[in-house]
Length: 250
Image (cartoon, rainbow, N blue to C red; front, side, top):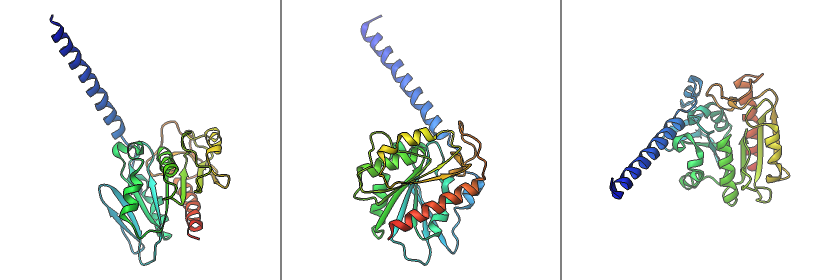
């Protein structure tokens, strides 16, 4: 067999392997968790919150009240973004513009700078907080570390920054909310990230909360069973997040 034929066959096999691996990854990433029927029901506008759903993001807009603070929320990895609608709707109801981006392949790691486009789209918003759940929170922390001039606050739900994203001296307020029974983001992982966060970081444990109940997408592989309901966990999360956003507005 000629050398050129061998090279052609080898190249073809290599290309096929790459295509198979890429296809497998796309299928894996696209098999997202959620949303539940309750999450979909939360995407209906009413007399308090207007829902605008477009391919790039979902907007939760408070009705008939002035809004100067926005909250951009990055969804967790392999979680269908609409799964966070119930909790985010409640935050908007409290008087905040809330934006929920649709991340490529359900992974915020592929567009951690999505907040730039959102901030440009809403120039009337004077103060911005960014946050997220799990992997989404880590990507929000990455964005905040690189753009502290654009962000007043960072909200982490069952999440923590990567070791390369040091926030302790960025002048950004940080809120950490976590479930005490979380089987994925454990207390030891949170403790290991303390040195990356400001000394005045607000730590809010949710007794009996797990990892998955921050959203409405069902059980999460590797998680521990919660001893409180999804509604109880989300209401505690909403309460802490709204209080944090209120303090940013002062």
